[in-house]
Every structure is written in structure tokens, then in C-alpha cells.
Length: 102
Image (cartoon, rainbow, N blue to C red; front, side, top):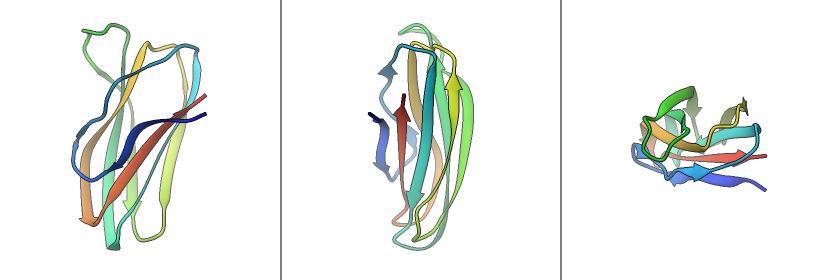
């Protein structure tokens, strides 16, 4: 079952932290625009303590259009918390969703 780290986000900023257990997980980001072209950049961040610094594990860059585009990767380490941070987004009606599965 996938957990949404970010759901149809339209503005920059970090999503909520998700606590997890286990080493393997699949992270996917996908998005669209309502018209024309756009772009989005998502930093996938993790930490091992609730008060620790967020470390960037990966950056996902999407080229957006009215057709869904996406990218992702496999997380192969047992980080205690993971979040998505939308660092850039552009385009008419641009929205990005990030999921964590595994």
C-alpha cells in the first residue's frame, strides 16, 4: 500500500514526515499541468531522529504537461523518517504527488 508524502501539491514546501520501518521502499513522483508545459523539482529527504537535520537522499526533476509524467527510485536504507520537499514548481495548474510504497 502506498503512502502519499505529498498530494497534488501546487506550491513549494515540505510535506509531512512519515515514520517508516524496513530497508526497502519505492518512491515515485508524478505530476501534470492543466495547460501547456511546466516543471517541478522534488527533494526526497530523510533523518533518523525527530529533531535531526533533514538530509537530501535524491532529487527528482519532472517535465510537466497535460499528460502525467513521473520518475522515481528505490530507497534501500532503513531511515526512520522520510518526506518530500517540493523545491520548485511552474506551469499553469501544475500539481505534483509523491508516494512511498513498500
